[in-house]
Length: 344
Image (cartoon, rainbow, N blue to C red; front, top):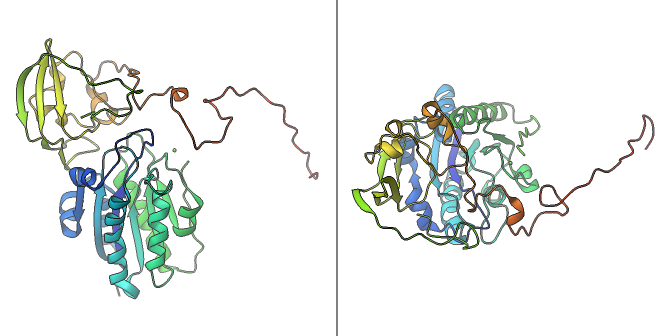
């Protein structure tokens, strides 16, 4: 009989210095898709779900997809949002009962909620509690995931993307699914751990400053919807929400409702801005922009804007890191005696 595998995607990259919490509306505005709707929208693109489906077809699994949910990076996920989304996964697992042979989850690894510093561990722990028997669970993660003991205790496979920008999401999901298939076929095998170690409605005014007031000419209004064409967003429906193109002192500016980084040239082209027609384009993105914009750039200049994504970590009021730690503190070289062979 074909194995029955439950899949789900639930991702959020939390910045605890951001005062805007990720509530349910933040996820709904970005993406909440269930079952066949998620498969239709995300089943043939650079997504975890697409990779899961590739392997499911290969081995003729009976695949049941619960939900695909994500929100733009922000402050902690609210309990309401976390509970509502997690419930969809738990309900599917409980309904499948003993029929279920394995679970594949596309998570992130840096989710913090307003009640837990380990969002992914909380998802996995709750999931184990509703399962009627110990079945393998495989999880994909971001390379900078904060892998915790709780995650390792409750998952059998934890495997990160290898590229940054993440152009290998689908490939990594296939890898995780292949490992899950092996675990289903040989349930006595020991667990496998692949653990990785990493609209500005204004946030904390200490970072980035207050909103700017400008005189501008309105060039275009849009509903903000587009379909990506680049390595990361290719084939995926994306929306900025209500979007405007304005001109400020001869500079075209894209003003959006739903904050997001620039990953794809189509995020300009859909609103009448041809990126290759300009000598200089400015994108709000740490690294992911490179996947689609590097090919058209004569030079890339990384700018420190002083906002929440600052690389000057000393400016951030960390509370939960051990001290001293580099680069927050000056660490002097210390001499360490290493025992010779045969000594304790």
